[in-house]
Structure formats: structure tokens, C-alpha cells
Image 1 (cartoon, rainbow, N blue to C red):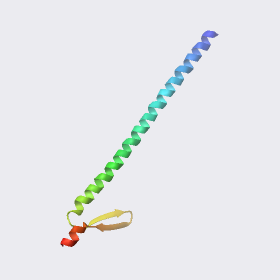
Image 2: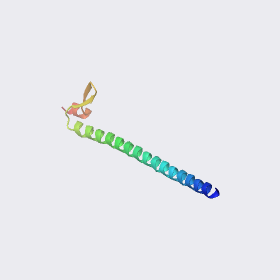
Image 3: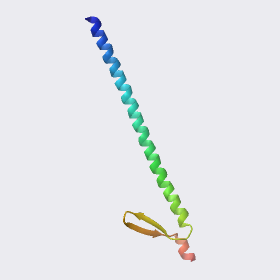
Image 4: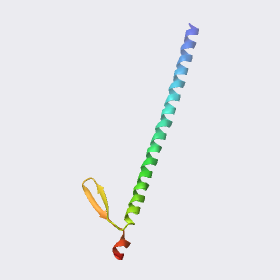
Length: 82
């Protein structure tokens, strides 16, 4: 009977260790994915702003859309020179 209790005890400890390792790995993976999404989002903002600046430097109106709303922006220095 004592042997069976030892085996059950070892099994439960092994199960707890496996569960803990899986939980920790999952937590690390979720943090990694979240950080990668944040980096991609920030890079997208930077790319958008850089493209807007590049297009505005051509002294042509640049359309900007948000849903149904639209505006056109132009570099202020271009209005004075033209």
C-alpha cells in the first residue's frame, strides 16, 4: 500500500511540474506575441508618418481618410511659394 501511495505522490508531483512548466512557457509566449504586435503597430505608425511627410514635400495635396471622413493636407511652405 505504501508503494502505491509513493507512486501516486510522484505522479502528482510530476504532473504539477509539467503543468507549471507549460503554464510558464505559455505566459512567456503570450508576452512575446504582445510585444511583437506592439512593435509592428509602432512601426506602422512610423511608416505612415514618413510616407505622409514624403508625399507632402511634393507640394501636392495629400488625401487622408478615416472611414467616411477625408481631408487633404499640404506642406505650409508650398502654399507660400506657389
